[in-house]
Length: 365
Image 1 (cartoon, rainbow, N blue to C red):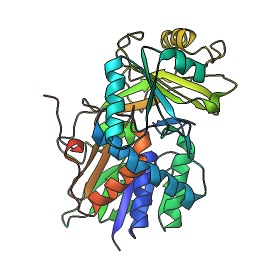
Image 2: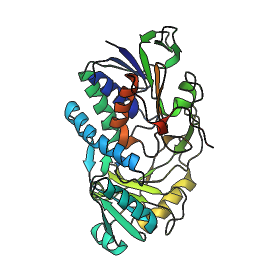
Image 3: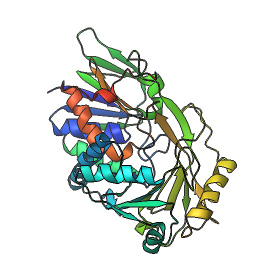
């Protein structure tokens, strides 16, 4: 039975452990922090799930993830995904592109005028064109990580928290060896490295030429709303009423309506980042909410911080180099794909080719 060590117990590493254990591999998952920690990119109560992309590749990948989310829910006994639908609004051309790509892939979608949309979802105001698609909603991030790990351990995986990896060594016989900060050695036939914001140091130390990764500290905000759990997920695309380059995302959750700008935070070192709340960034979100989210209470915001790790082209890194498979660069839009990424990781470990656009060695032209 092949022995696989997975370094990193966030969404992607845990999904990979689940998929590998399901295929009969002897899996050991090592996570440096304790369960439920808030140090990385996989914590909290809400992430958007949606199929609406203008790129057919990502529509297909999200569609593949949907039944896998249901599978891990069934295997773990934990509810993770709630389908509330989602709305995209903004420039007509952008919304039409989403609608056309969804339709070409056989997925439902319906366009509304801003007035029609606000009548249906009075908590939001809308821009020039609105697309609703029902195969969307939210994933509870903390529950998802736990569900992957429960399902993995049920298949025989060993999940160990509080184990920091000091070094990952390639052995001459094609295997790998992990050395922990406590001096323990864990040998394996292959390794999956899924360490989020630590990838620029941990993964880059064992893989030459890794695509550039940018790690930032982002600051989403939760706003109270009496009907938060009924809200659709929403994306406000820039270009007309919203002039911000990155766009705005939001969704309901048990913590209220979560809203944030996409990828605008400062570059940080995950080991030494300042988690203090930036009042100017908070003010920007509240200014947006006052104009566009009449159903949310801007007088009682709760701001949090998290890590974003992105590549220059915003495609992911899902690739293998010898016995080492690297999963990285998922922040901003990757969480929804987690169970499908776990499947791709297991394929790579077993020798299958990866997607060219997820190659390890990609560099901006």
